Length: 384
Length: 177
Image (tube, rainbow over all chains, first blue to last red; front, side):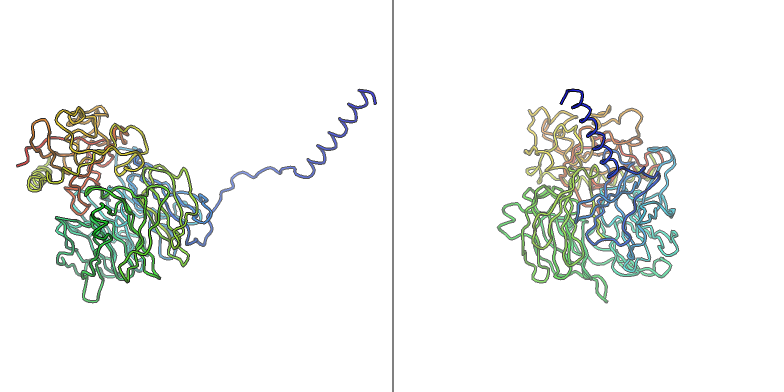
């Protein structure tokens, strides 16, 4: 075969090959303007990773991740000094207490509760609230729903202390409750909550159906503030709020028909562990799971003023026996943990000094996966 | 400064004087020294290898360096050091506003051997400085004891200094007695 004939044959083969390939997989033009949505039925294994974005605090964010796949599903932009999203009990709306300034970092301040559509992750409304929302290291008790979801409670600090009450049914500001000397909001029923007071007592507040105060009781001292204070990072399981002191002592506040009562006191650490300086630490250092009743605590070894330090272990306690039943070794130090509510729960772990979310099997403690490059300074983890 | 603010400051000083924390100094952990790298946060121990140590000695150069987390006045600070941001340990950077209300700590000055009440007034009105982040929690209390808590953004309570946080100063208020 001459060189010319060989070249012609090769060209013919190439043309046929290309035509055949083109016919099999030609791409059709992509339509413009397609926007993804989030599945309407939230998985119990989703987690909202809230981010105060400490280096650029006007740009708060809430990032939604599927713990099963590690997939990033979408995010919200949530304004200045952001604490966290609050998920409606029926899952149909996301509440986000937010602060804005008319000129970015200056100008007129406006505080709102923005309502987001959980499918499109876009704002569908807002409720104006007094421009008093506390700006602090994010805490779950900065904003909470009452047990029936009818009222959203938001902590204010100007430095006068109060609670903004928002009626989620009418989507209106319902009023402001002064809580002098007492901070944050811990719901105790459909029409009640308490704040923690500087003297170690609680302010037990009861509301009517319009969100106005019907009764307020300054309880007896519940906590030892002077020698070993409890953190404000309490968690609730049924009719109990559990708080842990800097040194690892557990205090239960029981919600009873007679009012708020101190429950059992016990310790996360044995005497030997205390001598080895084991103690709880972190920003969102506790999590709970019902059935069976379990308490999860981030633990580390350090001195008395390391109460904000992250830890590389999570200790798991049987709340009925008040005994540790498991130690979970984390791959990275965690300052925040959360456990999903379902029967095959996941344990999420994050840390403000990192942008990695780690996912573990909450029952076996087995490491499952990590999600990298998540936000800037992840703070609170919120699950449906 | 309004009368309310003066009252708050006086009240805070009084509390700090009553609650000297010298007994806790032995456990002082100096950390996040010379931080200029993000992301590091008020509780960012563990992300970086912490620099642990006891109270800086009188001859320790960092104990007298206002741009160091080990500076003696920084025993309960939480935030970006204004000395690294165009200000100083007591002055705010240009174009910012010093919040009149704050939290207070009691720190030991190894140079003269005395304890001082330190007021950690935040400088406000611009985005975060982002330099020399420092978090030391000596005597730090939870949010329900506000004037001993370093977890609040203290750029609050004033129409001018409301709310964007820039950096933190460490002003000497008085000798702790």
